[in-house]
Image (cartoon, rainbow, N blue to C red; front, side, top):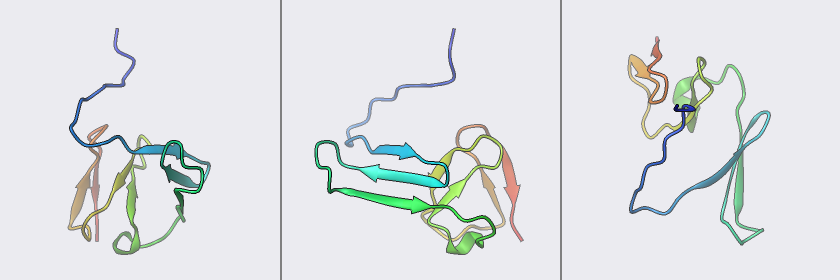
Length: 83
């Protein structure tokens, strides 16, 4: 029985991250001074966000470009329309 997680082998190194109550922390394993913390603020316009947070499942995705007229969550498939 699947628990909803999937392991994928990629040639790129893994990204270490921890979710906090208001954002997430990216860090480098074994280097305690190598980290960056990002906080998410409700109401920030999508074009000013570094990351997209899915309202349905809570997944966090890098937002590499300014959003267009819609977004689809890569995890749960929820769709979001943007003005």
